[in-house]
Amino acid sequence: MEILCKQAVLFSVPMVTALLFFKAISARTHEGLRTKFFQEFIKTGIIPTDSGKLFSRLADWRQESDYSAYISFEEKDVKPLLNKVKEFNNIILQLIEKFSLNNS
Image (tube, rainbow, N blue to C red; front, side, top):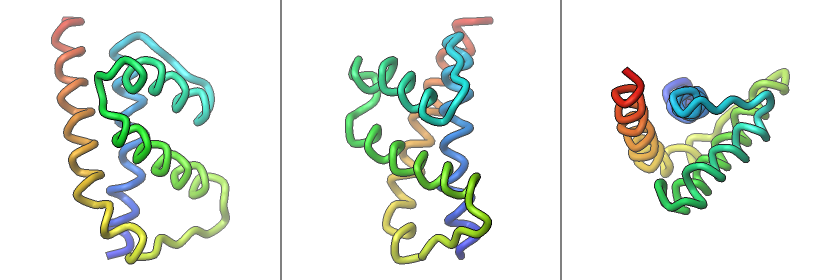
């Protein structure tokens, strides 16, 4: 279960990176990614504020997992978020589709 939770959570960050790519926006750091995502999608109301807060939490976890020798996600912390993460990822996928179709 821990691996499933970890993958579901950590997958959100590369998805946001892909979304920014289709908008021709790049970021060099995790913090830059978060900032540009908030500027383009949260502050403009394209994505709800609650989803922005969720992404911020996921980005923190992703960064921690990238720079820690060992990180363990507790099921009690992650399991309640899985439905929200799934909804978030679906929103991002829909936007990626929209922007990729506009660029073709």
